[in-house]
Length: 278
Image (cartoon, rainbow, N blue to C red):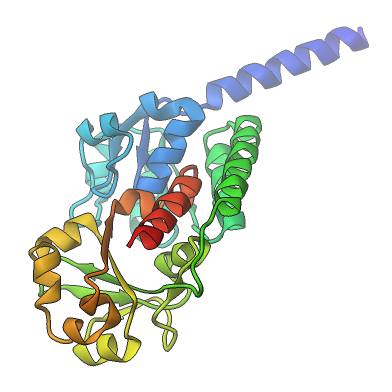
């Protein structure tokens, strides 16, 4: 009788866990979308935010965010059973509205480090009721990251890299310490040219000249918005830097560069390759 009771309990637990796997998911960041897909539930995503560009099939899904802002109505309209969001990106009021509508909401903090990436994968998997699969994916990702780090090439000294976020000349920011860009630059064998402040601050010509980067790094859309490499080289102060004199301007896909999840190894290898080829 005891064996039968245990067996029934295990079956009930298994079926309950299976039933808890969300069928309609909304992901509100590129990293959340990619990680959900890597865990095998990409097919269950019904809507995404504007930053999601990978895998390509997810770009064809409806966008629920407008310039990264969301509304409860827009989310509820897709009848999700789970909304995954970066920590701090959705207001308490909207969270309350989702809960009142019977929709589970999970926010996850992203930490910009190797351990942070592995923790992120595990947390997403837990939210999806796929903890064992998440543990396996985290271990696989850790191995790939170790291989990527072991393959890092370096010069006589780390290149000083200045990351500029731009959407035309009207919106320009530079990345300081403790930002995602600071972390990926360091992991890729470079050195952030900015160490006076944390996070992001508005771009100034004075800061650019003072930093004197060896390389200027940008998202591909940012470089395009400024007129390409020639446009960057004509910006005030750029010609006075080592990067400007040597035309060392690097562009990369933002979804890859700031992933800090299942593709971190690819970001490290790709950025290191670009830093070394110039």
